Length: 258
Image (cartoon, rainbow, N blue to C red; front, side):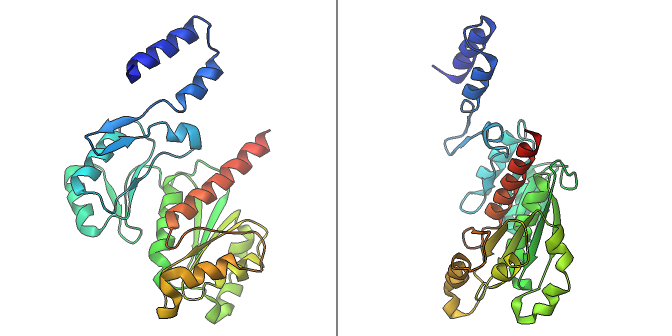
């Protein structure tokens, strides 16, 4: 049975009263995907299930594959974005796709007009230990903005000059979720979590000298933090941090309405 036939049967069952609309909605959450060539299957109902649409991982895909997926997704998704897109690939994509915006520091391409439109309550504040951590931090910031969250940025406040952080306490106090991005030894999330009354998401980066082991040292520092309320995502995973922060705020919003 193909998807149109299955959908027709489901709708007929709702119309005849055999299935309640709420039950049908649950079935539809796992219903729709769309093949693109022989290389992809787009999960159109991911936003219905999880609150956020599927996002394209650009690294390892050809320009033609990325373009085809974007064109298929633009018909249904509220936000279409692709991560880890290098400048030359972005230029090729923009030549093919009308309205495609490129964020070079974040390495994100997106089809959206919602970057500055806040649709969810709460503030996600993003902090970096150093300037070299900015690409990962901007990946988190742009992802969160495109998904409708208010974002505040505070860059280059690492523990080697702790007075820089202490002079910006208000950013920490106003945040509802904090994303703290750090390489080297990765101590900044512990310091921030000792000052914050909200969840802190640590993002280790691969920035550092040889014994940082490409981000493993800051990852272990964050995992072993003595400060409470810290969750840690994978090395250089700004996108994942933004998604986790968004889910925290969405859950808090749902609970406040109950």
